[in-house]
Length: 295
Image (cartoon, rainbow, N blue to C red; front, side, top):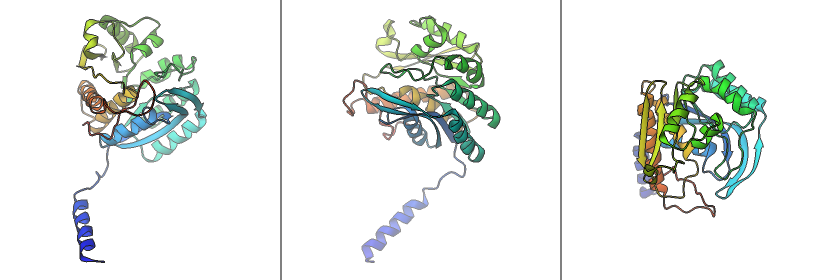
């Protein structure tokens, strides 16, 4: 080995001395479907976990054939195998927080709720994924009631967008007052906190410049506003927001949910801004690039 090579190795070893993993990093588990295009689902969740320096794990519920043009196919996994994955991960590695995404069927919602109870996971963020951006159904109709009765009561926070809130409640959500009304109705289903996301709301004057969410704890409303980012790269925003929220809560269990939600919204807004000019795929809605440092 020549002198230059030995010098390079010595420098690498010196650099590596300062890179030491935490003895026990925050453990984050996503229970969701796979997005083959990499923009949403478990891919977005794991990228978010990594960006926020947590240890990410995954339980797959479904495989999708998906890209920037839409969802071409969905293959649901058996609920029994979802349960087997949950036992493997939670029985050995454990989790400081769970984030759920696409669960798809009544049986998978049931087994998810049962395992959350069995392993006593304290922090659970439920993103009730129902329909893809392109309009493809991602939740069977009979699973909606199971969400309400089995999973929502176990949730620290549920994070429906406006369309999901409408689907869950059966009334239109168009204004800020509608969002507050929806938050109250959803809170009665058992979660500790409700976040109704308003990124899809365009009916009020402020919507042109702001993305506004409503957070409710059963007593107080908190209005979260961020500048609306003008970009087509919006695929996976819901997954990313919920995963960031789970990460912040897992990293600091004493942190207030309001503060963690604000931090997650800031993270997402920065990520949207840094990804806004990226061009991937031929579809009308592209992904974000989580590897761009947004935190």
